[in-house]
Length: 392
Length: 216
Image 1 (cartoon, rainbow over the protein chains, first blue to last red):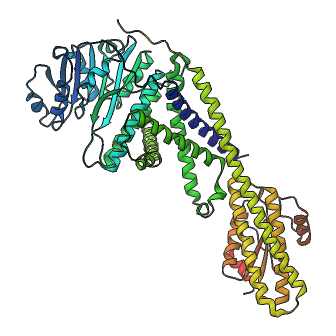
Image 2 (cartoon, rainbow over the protein chains, first blue to last red):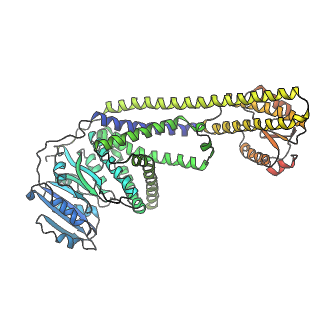
Image 3 (tube, each protein chain N blue to C red):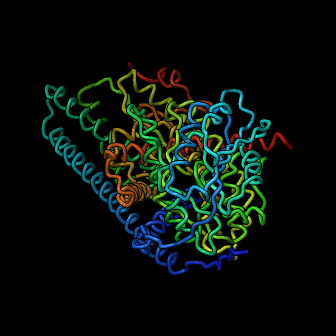
């Protein structure tokens, strides 16, 4: 009797993973034509691009220049750089740009969210665009984003890609693939009104949304995800534009990568908990699919981690000598899910029109990377739970 | 305010289709897995059958040829079959840990073991081989120390000329009942060393204590 319950949980979780994968593939199949919609919106509002900056003297000038080079009417574009108490020459570098459209606000170091809010207060545009100080956009990025602002759209996300460099580390290449996959999936989520993050590097918002739901949360470590969830909870639409490209920096070495992911997953966990109440038919697909699976994936994470730990502790070398003896239905199911995931990744890359990625990178991504991320999620959430307990 | 609120929908047909497809894939996966398990089982049965046949041939030889000059050949053959039996036993044990007990498979295995045991005993007598035989009775459902005890016995087997035959008294079989009756076994674990019931102390019998009862 005792061995029945773990087995049920095992197969149950596998079914949930399978269901999620199949659903995402179905969303793609049902909306194949809409993925690359060429919208014909004639929306030409005034735009304020807000760039919060803390010690970004290296990249701030290129970032600002990429905005100024945008194919957009000069009089409708302003750039507000919010200097979050930088200790380097960020402010001086900004002043070297002699363009009337660029404003500089200096303030004390209070964090990214607060800096964004400061910028929003000063902004004159109808559309607010957040841009990271180490990222740069293409000429038509802004124009392409605006096409998605239908009447019920409060925010539009972009295609966040990794900066192409000459000598990319293996870690950077994996992240490049991950970011492309994420862009595609965000587009799929947009089809069911389930976009759950407006990435900091480059996202557009209607200014009026901040009047209704207030600005970015200064107490949140993942403020770009939190604001998106808040917009969803207010039942406004977030769209996704796969063609508006922004290029951003990613961690090159393992140490900084781990740090970044820990922040992402701890923040993600807190946000999901905060908005868990949206798992309710009132919030449609966003609530009962996207949010539900966000919570389920955390549960799944713990289950898988415990199972893996159990297997490793048993340390049976017998398995290697007699692989056939060990095959159970669960392994066949895992193989099927693995194949579906690879198919999904290849579909994503095809739709993004990027077949430059080598096959071995795709395999490495699906096997190595996903488990690496799973490990980080586990560590992050474990720390988070420990942290919360200490606060009490 | 220009902004309109969303009219939330739930894509029921999407989830229903996904559910049906997932169910089908799930079913196929489980079916394939079970087929493989069945195939592994039948392969094990075949191995046991083949070892059994080889032992039958050898026991025929024993009956026909009384001359002890064939002892070396017979002992060598026997050790090969014994090894095969032992390997099959390990595989079955491994599968038991993963999937639980397959009564049919285990019963066939114990019968193979018993035949191995009988043959070994006969060969010992005929050829005067200094080989120890340990019968080890366990219960797979009701014996917490059986596994640990088994490890002690395996350690003793390592350094001596010993054969170990393990019988699970939970399995319903005439053979098991007869063995239990012969040696008057009432509880598990029980150890029979060279035809003597080890009437020792409570708890686990150590490797050293077992070895003291063996002939080297």
